[in-house]
Length: 476
Image 1 (cartoon, rainbow, N blue to C red):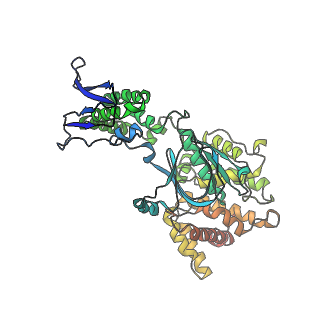
Image 2 (cartoon, helix red, strand yellow; image 1 turned 90 degrees about the vertical axis):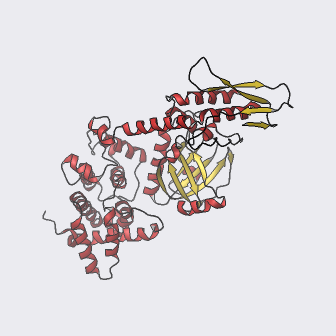
Image 3 (cartoon, rainbow, N blue to C red; image 1 turned 135 degrees about the vertical axis):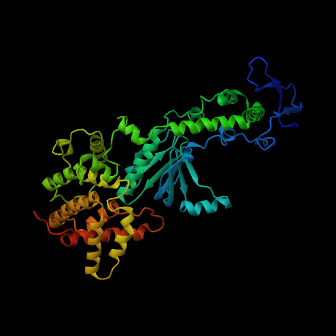
């Protein structure tokens, strides 16, 4: 089982270890005296489970972890897709070189440590992968994100700058969509190591560092970095065959499985007080159960503040508040600190309305539950107005109490906004545009976003204009 090659200047010989007692085969590198020396390489004679020798390693000088770790654990970025959808994208720098801005609609997929840009939806893109079309991938390790109003005349634009000197602008005309994307990408960046010298493969190595079967990998990983290019082929060869023994892989997989199964659940961490219950981002019924109510306290506080000093404000709920201040308010609420919305730092009523809209946007399931979405859409499609009203009223009565009562309080408040439309310039149509996508969305928005948005707006408008018929006359 000897292989010969004339493409290297060094040779590798197996040397049995007698002093360490581990049974592993140590490899020794001998520098060749001449470029005309021939390389003699020997493989371990240990067979795999199927009785076949391991396949030869590719000689291409790629990231070491791609060859050694691909069969042990999946890359981190493949573990979870955090967000995906359409945005406007423009690449403005490549490797530090400025590019002409060229906006294009792009399907964007965000995972735990990278962004992929597709020219079409991911399902279509995956089918096109067979023809050699691959998405543009951006590693978020060490990346920077910031709002970039000065970079474009378009509104709602932010910039992502990665270590290689590539810069991208991302944009959407719909405010809540771009805000969600900004925070999702920022959170992904914040979770990654700040050290630019820590590529993703080092994260993978760290997670299995304590395994005795990978100590040799770490040793050779550092050795390959230090060796000259002409020595790397032989080092990669011997690393592959010293680490590819099936029993070693099985031990690593077994340890990883034990680690994953022993991890405490989110509920356990919350019960122990290690993770506090959040207001933003929690399910509506969870928030209400904690407060022993059917309408979240924060929602009632915001509505009270708006009705106290915001009914006459031009563009209420349409105008955006300062995002940093909204995030500060969000943080205070999540930390269960005392909140006084009459404090001077919340003087801008648009900060309060922005926080309220953010609360509804960040619900894991929207105020109109996923299971009811299509039923509300079918109701709004009815030609007869009375039939529409009766069907929507029937659906509202079937909602879970937290959804129904919170919806009633919110829409009663919005009818007061409409009543002052001559001063705040917010009609039922304007509020429908603002709250439609915030309160209703399909569980799978693929393909029908534009159609859904029309129905979302119409449902909100109907419930505002026919509030008394749908929710019943107010007793107060």
